Each structure stands twice: as C-alpha cells, then as structure tokens.
Length: 142
Image (cartoon, rainbow, N blue to C red; front, side, top):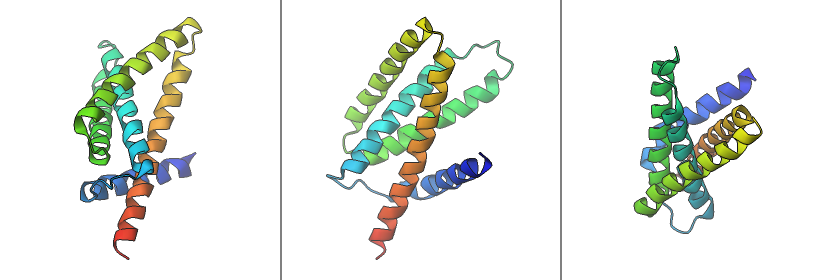
C-alpha cells in the first residue's frame, strides 16, 4: 500500500509541475476522456466538501484538503478541455450524478463504499493525467 501512495504522490507532483506547460491537443480522445473524468472528480469533491459536518473535529483539515482537490481537478480539466464552458457544465453534471448515486447508496447503507470508490477513481485520474502529460512532453521533446 505504501508503494502505491508513493507512486501516486510522484505522479501528482509531476502532473502539478508540468500540467501548466501542456496545451490542448485537439482530437486526442484520451485527453478528452481525462477532461471529463476531472470534471466528475471536481463535482465529487464539491459534494463531499458541502456535505462535511461543521462539528466534525477534522473539519478544517478536510475542508482544506477537499478545496485543494477541487482546484486541482478544475485546473487540470480546464487545461485538458477545449471548451471551458462545457467543462464547467460537466462539473455540475458530475456533482449531480454523485448526489444521485449517494441517494441510491443511502438506501442500501453503502455510502462509505461509494465515497471510497470515487475517491480512488479520482486518484487514478490524477495518476493517469500525469502519465499522459509526461508522454506528451516526451513526444514533444523528440
């Protein structure tokens, strides 16, 4: 488990370091998919942030962490997306879909599983985005 965290941390660092230097490559389906996934993740973290209970002893720390995640996914998604307005609409749609999924999961008491699953999916999106950016930078430098 520790190795996975280290790999994700390195990928996240690479992504944050190099993402700003990468411009959109029109017609690249992988990049379009990553933009859509970042929109879903931004929506997810927004819902989780709004759902936090203020009496939670870890509220301030969680609020800071989730705000950072929202900013990261919005920045990456907007960077990957050719249409910023469409991306913003996808964020709202992602939040709505997660709320609906949460309501359905609440009926079966599986909300924690849903939250964990989506959180891991967002970590994978960040890792795949870092790989994508690094590949594109290597292609550009050849």
